Amino acid sequence: GYYIDALDTLNARIGWRSDRLQITAFAENIGGEDDARLWNLGNYLSGYQAVIRPERFGVRVGVSF
Image (cartoon, rainbow, N blue to C red; front, top):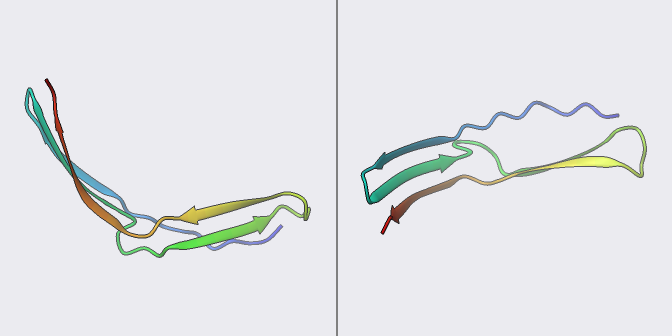
């Protein structure tokens, strides 16, 4: 197999909820890199791939009826 460097990701989420309303702010892969890593376990017919998402920030709002 091959040696793959360690990858660190940092995600954050904060929210507020009432009886009918929910608001959540989030950030994913803060300060990270977007990348795809492919490695093999010693056999060219098998392998694993890890795809790291780029940074994402957003707000979600939900309403219950």
